[in-house]
Length: 267
Image (tube, rainbow, N blue to C red):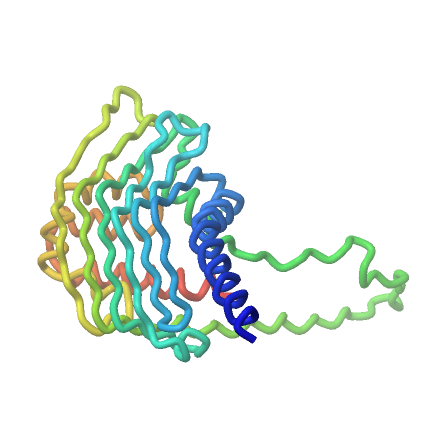
C-alpha cells in the first residue's frame, strides 16, 4: 500500500512536470500550424481546476513573405473564469489582464497586411461545400410549344446568427508601442508611435465599450496611418478616431464591425 502511494506521488509529479514542459510547445505548434506565423512562449501556466491561464513572453513573428519578422510581443496575459461558464453560450471571465509591449503592422509589397493575414488564418470563414456539377442534374425536359416556364421559388435566406455573447467583469489593457511599416507604398518609411495605453474596463460585453474618450485620445496619433492600411470598416473606425476624436461616429462604425465579425465567424 505504501509503495503504491509512493508510486502515485512520483507518477503525479512526472505528469505535472510533463504538463508544464509540453504545454508551451503544444500551444506554439498549434498556432504555427494554423497561421504560418512563428510563435514562442517563455512561460505558460494553466490551472484547469480554477480555470485560470497565464502566459508571459509571447512572441509572434511574421512569415518569410514579409520584409521584417517582428509582429507582436506580449509581456503577459492572464485570465480567470468560472469553469462552468466556459461551456455555456455566454462565457464569463472574472478578470483578464493583457500587457502588450509592441505591435508591428507591416504590409508587404504584394499589399498583404500581417494582422489581417494572421486573423484570417486563425479564424477562417468556412465556406459551404460546392455541389458537384453533375449532382442534381436531371434529364432535359422539352416543354410543349409556347408553354410558360414556372418561376422557381427564391432560395430561403439563412437566418442571421446571434452575436457571440460574453462578459469580462474586469479587464486591464496595456499597450506601449505600435510600429507601422508599409512596404507597398513607394517611398514609405517605418513610423513608431508610443501610445502608453493603460486602461481598465468593467463589465465588458462588446468591443465598442473599449472606445472610451481616453482610448480614442491614445490611439489618435496612429489612427490615420493604420486606418489607411486596414481595408473596410475597421480602417474607417481608426481614421474616425484620429480625425474627429468623437465617440459617436467611432461607435457607429465599431458596432457594425463587431456584429459582422461575430456573425461571420460563427458556423
